[in-house]
Image (cartoon, rainbow, N blue to C red; front, side, top):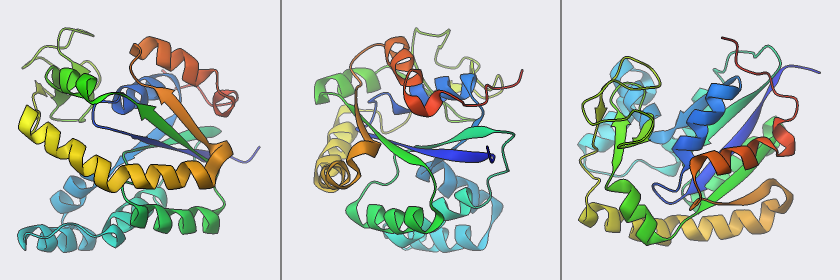
Length: 232
């Protein structure tokens, strides 16, 4: 079988469990990740042509367009190293709008890559509760819950062993409610479109359950059957 990546798109509200499952999957299988926020920071820090374009948009007080977000994704996808066997390309929180999905749909059709959409469902009350205890590594950006997995604010990241666990400045109720309103306005209509058009490639995941239960359910899915396990 020709070595290749399987694209998994993780969709859902903030704190629906996407980041945790991506972390667990990367501990088990070979793979790479993409998130729009991390890509923005990386390109700006490296001063790439795309990063300079993004910086100009942000400095002008404008929103980064769907076209630019798609350029960030395309750049990451086209610079993936060839895996030893079958591997995962785990995409966190992209696409987020109908416009982004339409661009992505054209790209996936052009490249003919294997892909799935995993939609994590949670109630708003659980999002608020989870975000109030969320910690994020300032190095690898992996998410953790305070008091679990040896995660403590100001402590060393259990994943990369280098970064420090901190609280995000926007993890407060006012900011969270704003993000949820944006999600309902921009992302929920897109998810309805994806569910209707992708069908056999679209799966709903109950994100209210514990991370371990969700993980065991995920790895029983067909796409994980012949994946290359991570080398120690």
